[in-house]
Amino acid sequence: MAARLTAVAALLLLAACAGAPVQEMSDARQAIQAAEEAGAREHAPGALSDAQRLLSSAEQKLQIRAYSGARHDAREARRRAAEALRASQVNEN
Image (tube, rainbow, N blue to C red; front, side):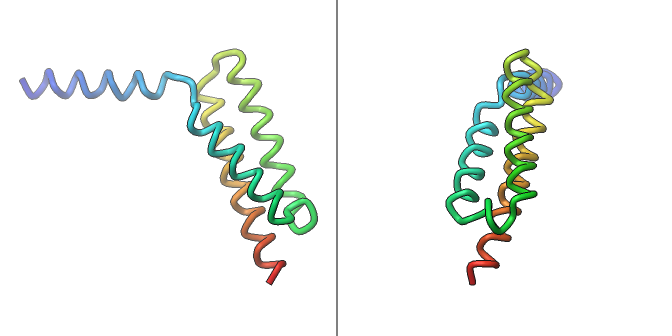
């Protein structure tokens, strides 16, 4: 019984990973928007540019159903956008 539950849990986890990274894409877009609104174009243009490039890459990978790569790029885009936001907030104070 335990082995069967483990197998079912593993399949569910695999299925969740195989799907489109909808939440990750949304998170990245929101993080980029927040960074832009905080002045990242002026205070952290490199990090903001990286975030936008990574989001674009994620969108391209999503189009060809390369979900793992899209998920990775979306997460990295969100991370870089968060860096841009922090840099903007530091420069505002």
